[in-house]
Image (cartoon, rainbow, N blue to C red; front, side, top):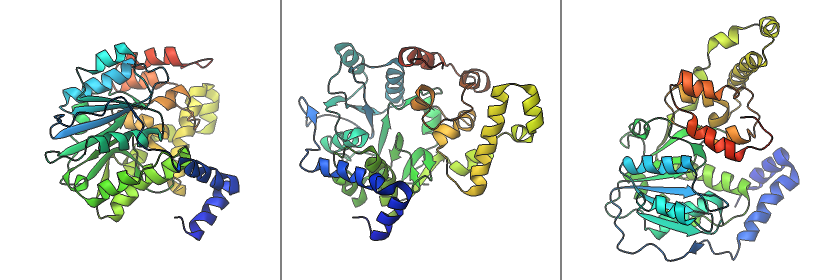
Length: 346
């Protein structure tokens, strides 16, 4: 239950409707069963091994896009037993046929509770951790990639240094590891905070509530329990990677060049550094996408290229960054954008 001070802070930031609307979503979850599995549960004798990946998927048509198959394939090659949990309510036969050789189990559920509802279902249905579980990785299909060998990213995880690892961290709302990629080691898995958190997840219909209570709340609950959380690409280090040459371009030089892309690169570099000075947190997977890619990060957020909801204004040359500066292949991304975009140039 939020304190009076927390409620008033939220009301002042968002207004009464901004506070009440998430509460309506919470109330709507009362009486709703969080278990939304369609079809038989995974067999009790299912063998998983020490490294398990719970991969969350959604496609309104029950399809499996090329970039998702590539990601699942990379996890399989990295030695993970994959529990593929789809919120689509169904899977096309060709999608299931492609997944079955790669996955230990496939769980089809109704889209109730968003990604955290699917994570909860996969984790509790499989009884994780099991006695031989050494690592649980949670991933989802909100990214394009991996654009680099996934093993390079996984090599950054060291459970002797931290109990929980994420690719990126956010300071928006409160400090948290972003939930599209989270790796939990032995100490986190066997701590009471693990099951306490997943048992608390409810099928809430408010996305804002889920972000605040579950995405942010997961890291915060683990920190309060004395567990350590760390990002592979720390926020402060990414901010330092802004190219100073762009900051040095004067307004007159940028205007005389007449190239809007040059102007946007300059303004966005300044935007990042201004935010650092003002201690105003940005979303690293959007505002710092360039710095991430150039420092070995293997993903690009789908929503950045599909809809750019936060209006990041220097994303126009993403192909050149992927192909020329990072030396990676953008073909997989381009194929999905050809299918997805309407009245918007990539």
